[in-house]
Image (cartoon, rainbow, N blue to C red; front, top):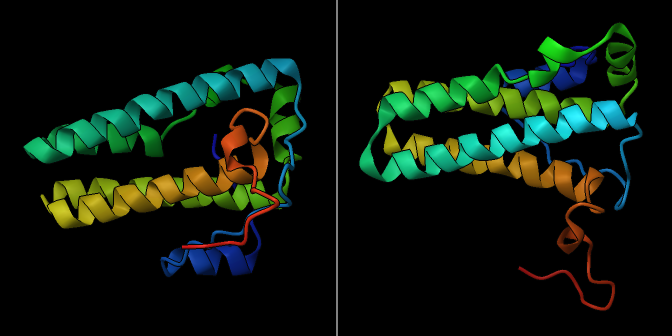
Length: 160
C-alpha cells in the first residue's frame, strides 16, 4: 500500500518528472508505533538489498536483474501485506512531506524499471542515482537518529 493522499501540485510535479528534495526540519522524526516502525525497518532492509542488487547488476548489464529488483522496489510494501487497519490509519497520518518523498521514490523505481527494460546503462545509472537521492532526502529529514552522519555540521558552512 503506497501512500496516495497527495494534493494536485505534488502530483503534477511528479508527473512531469520533477522530484523535489524538500527536506523537512532537520531532526524531524516520524511518530509511529513500535510495531509499525519494525515493519518500516524490515521494508528498508529489503530496499537496501534491492539497491545493492542493482548496483551489482549494472556493470555486467544484467538488465533483467535490474528490472526485477527495481519493480520489486516500486511495488514494495512488506507493509501492505502486514498492516492492521489501525496501522493503515497511523500511516495515513504521517507528514505530507514524507508522503511526497514516498511517491517520488516509487516513481523513480518505475523509471528505473523502464531504463533497464530499454537496456540503457546511462539511464539506469541516472535513475538509480535519483532513486538514491530520494533515500538520502528522506533519511536526512526523518531518520537522523538512525543515521546521525546526516546531521549538519553546525560549525561548517555548506560547501560543494
